[in-house]
Amino acid sequence: MGLSTLVAFMLLGFFLAIRHGFAVGPVQLGANLLLIEPRGGTTQLPIGLLPTVRSFPQVRAAAAIGGASMRYGADARPVGVEGLSAKAFLAISGLVRAGALPGAEARAWLADRTGALVSAASAHHNGWRIGQDLVLHPMRGAPQRDLTFHVDGVIAKRNGVNFASDVNLHLGYYRRWTHQDTVDAFVVQARHARQADALAGAIERRFANSTTPLRTQTFKSLLQGIVERLANVNAITSLVIVASLFGLFLICFNTVIHSVSERLGEFALLKAVGFVPARLVWLVFLEAFLAIFPAAAAGMLCAGLIVHAIADEKLQLPGIMLTPAAVAVSALIAIGLVILSSLLPALRVVRLNCGQVLRKG
Image 1 (cartoon, one colour):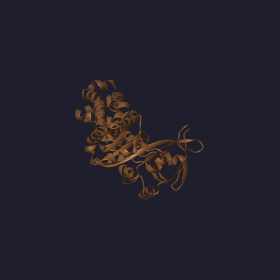
Image 2 (tube, rainbow, N blue to C red):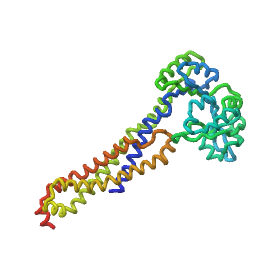
Image 3 (cartoon, rainbow, N blue to C red):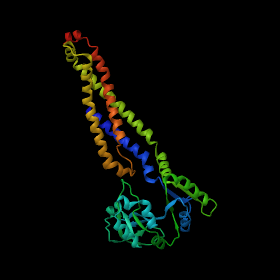
Image 4 (cartoon, helix red, strand yellow):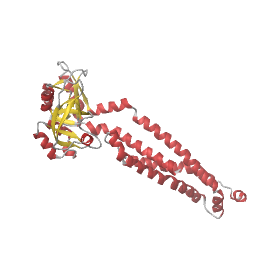
């Protein structure tokens, strides 16, 4: 029973952490951020539209982003390359403030027009180091030529999430390399999160009749839409939690009632020598509590370790954590299981016929 309780509460804690991550992750990631793309998705954005977007009074910063796929090394490992508006990218991402990028590396990148910031995952996978000069090769059939850059800094993960592509170049260098004056998207940071939806509508209306109509989405709505398309997380986790807890209740109930049945003679003797029914009930409750609650606490501890070590890295969504509210709910569920499992056995003990039980031996 202890092992079953541990596993069940480990699953309970894990799924409660997942639910919290899907509930608050989109808000944490982009409450005040907008993604602007060409409507229809068939064309790219002219870079000349960026100053107009920046002119909106609600805009704090706006960055243009262009991307390409390249390959590196003899085994042609795929590498994602992005060209970014450097200062706006650092301001919007907050990498320096968050400690994901040292200030010295950020300043070195701003001063090096042919330099790049690389992600920690890509640096580890490819063996890249700060100060190296590297060459990437185009994919087969792609129009790009070889790309040479200098590694100025490494962007660490923040809350388990990569906030940048494998290789991040200055937009000017990226445009010279591709010979293009278009980009894939603009990322806009609103001055206040509450202005994000209104700003998205204003930008769309401004370009509604232009040659390049825009589609503007808040990052919050974008991520929540992805979550909803993938699955109804709450429904799935609720179903798994209810099923596991119901199975656990049956195991706990059968174990406690079997344990009490084997010791009916002892309870009858205690009742015969003067133990009041309330004390006998407490004995049954204490036995169930000691069998269930420590195992439940160990299961929650295991869930916390799993969430910390694996979940936020693999799912790459901030907010995946065991909150105090989740721990409190788990404690209440454990107490509820103790009460439900001990209720019928305790009632049986209270109604014992001492003489009849003791005669049976």
